[in-house]
Length: 66
Image 1 (spheres, rainbow, N blue to C red):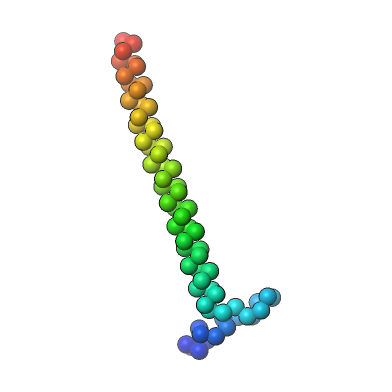
Image 2: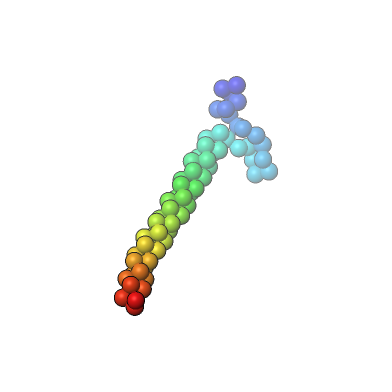
């Protein structure tokens, strides 16, 4: 079993796929997905902050008009 993991995983059209290449691809995938998650969270928090800032201004304008 360990010999299988250290050798070639399977044969593809472009040649044998090594387990080291597969782990490298998975590492790259995790970094990419993590980056996407961070950017989405950043955009979410910016939207929340902007909504809070502009809702206060609107409330102040409404109270001044009354």
